[in-house]
Amino acid sequence: MPFQNMTNDTTWNVWQDGIQEILTNSLSNSNELTVKQTESINNLIQSKGFANNASITPSVASTVSQRMKTNVFIYGNIIKAGSIIRINAQLVDSKTEEVLKPFQIEGLSSEEDIMRIIDSLSAKIKNTLIISNLEKTVSYDYKNYAYTDSPEAFKSFIYGKNAFLKRDFPTAVNLLSRAVAIDSNFVGALDMLAWAFWNLDMFNQAKGIALKLYEKRDQVSIYMKAVLNHTYTYFHGTINEDIKCLKQILAIDDQLPVFYFVLGQNYRIINQFDKAIPELEKSMEIYKKWDSKPGWVLNYTELGFAYHKTGQYNKEKRLYKKAEQDFPDDPSIIQRKVILSFAKGDTVAVTHYIEKYISILKENLSSEADIKNSLAQIYSEAGTLGEAEKYYRQTLLLEPDNPNRLNNLAFFLIDKDRNINEGIELVDKSLVSSPDNFNYLHTKGWGLYKQRKYKEALDILQRSWDLRREKAVYNHEAFLHLEEAKKAVAGQK
Image (cartoon, rainbow, N blue to C red; front, top):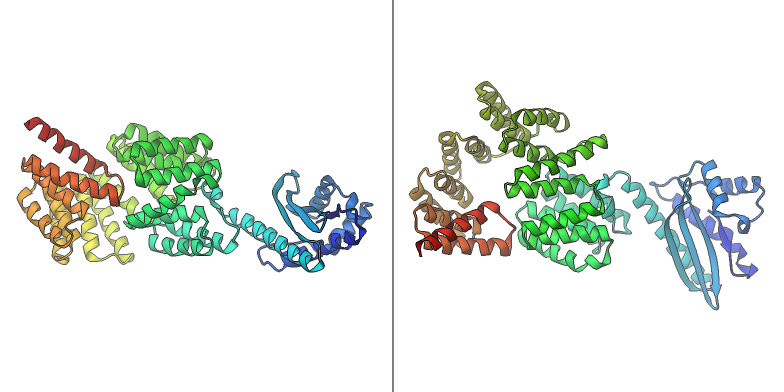
């Protein structure tokens, strides 16, 4: 940790050793860092024939640092101009001699001010080193998110990110909000907080954060600017615009599996499975190259869904076998295996996986209504509509006043042409409690379309769409239904 006096004033020689001593003591007080003591460093330097710091070059400092088996060393100098004193310091990689981060602090050349300067420098270096250590626990996907000088904020971000990837979004919101409370300019934490709110259907909060981040985009790196553009576009733009943003991110760094995943997911949303599959597979290939499991289970379920829709059942089956190794007993994997077993006509496997699925949901303390609603969704996707209707009705019996349960059954009856009139009656009850709910309006408009009341249907579907784009994000099914209503009205003219 050599500091050189560059002032041509010998009265500052004492501070060469003083800065080294103060920094060593300060950094040693951190439990997260291992610091070599001043005496050990000086003894080794003297054994190499160097009498003072002025004769030590960065190359010599690097050699000493490696001999002491340290990863980084601090190299700096003291410069005086008039009444102003400036301390420059650099964190340097011991092996490569690459400057990891420079520091520069200045103040008046009084003894009182020099102590303040050194304390400030010490705090900055300590925080940088702690954050650097914490970054080692973060996957490559998120290393560029460390836009903070606060170790406590970064710790909260890491815990929040981990909760997010486990799909524990309420915990993620709490932890990421704590990170932002500590450092309001921590754009990485703000970005992930927006996505956590979105996954909780808290769209206003998500879109508000996305707008705030967009206004900060010129204050960050080119890579992070592209990420913030993606977040803003996803919440405020179109899905095709967002696809362009994702490609820009991957043009900057093509080794980011999380963004190949999101790109593939976007293609899946608009039913372009031939484009979705290569992107989702690329994401998986990078994790495999890293000898790491994917960040979350959705990497498997999204790709499995795309395989299923394109009839690639054998690939889908092999994928789920690997998925269960990485995410054992995850209910979303079991859900996909039920649907695959239906498609292959394996009734024994269907029974087995449904029983396992119900058991896992009960262990996770899911309510009886949630379990039956999940079963209804499985049977509906599998095309077993009688069983799906049975479970949707059982769900509603358990929670007869829940407008979402009313809407779920209503949409199923309308969309699958089971009982369109009853479906409209049910959704009308939901609309009494929430007349501006875009999901309920979508159901009502789709029902009217099925009744061939095209003008009424178009008016309500358009209103639903406008509210959805104002409050939420793109929904491809809603878009397609609106387009069908527009064509039907145009055809009547």
